[in-house]
Image (cartoon, rainbow, N blue to C red):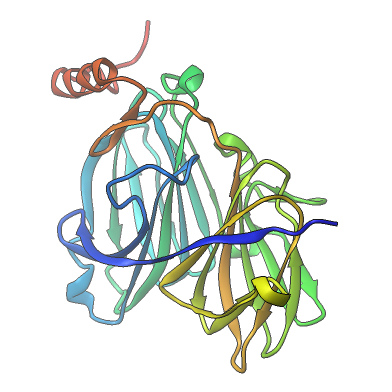
Length: 284
């Protein structure tokens, strides 16, 4: 059986977003070569000043977002009337479709925060669909106990395990793999899917033999290619990582801030719709 190999390794770059929130951006640094994934940001700090300003109300069109909290919490509010807190271990999904205005603000009691936000591209055929929203608490997410750790399904489907967030775009699957020291797991992303490994704790070795990469640490990400499974093994300390897979769209991508469409004309229309209120106006 053929195995996936490592195509490249990316290192996250410090940045800021929202009202000055400090983040580490691994995907989405000025180019779109991780189709269907547009952006992957990590927010991690035990200094409240780094994140207290949060992400005040802002628009989106043409994408889906998945927010995962490992520690701490944020409150989501949107123009559709959703208002909910996402706390440690939980996941939150939003399909912006034709238009959403929402905010994400840290909970008042939080003194530390650790989480990720992933942007997934919507196919051209569904970019103007009605927006949608779903949330899952930690206890609602399915867990597979492993011989040397555990695997949580944050979004999508993995074997017989189905997350409450079960219909992200591009058949995307987001897993949280935690391994004990020296623990091993063989991951088999669906054939034809983009596959990414993003550690957030400890270090992980990826692959085997001459293609093995040792000691991939938090803040870096492995981009895989080819097909088949790949072996993941923790180092001398426990390891935690996100495993992402999704079907590439192969469509043109034009982005202007929170709007991601297929042509410059569609971007101009999105800006105009936001300025006139049509972005979130009810359809008749």
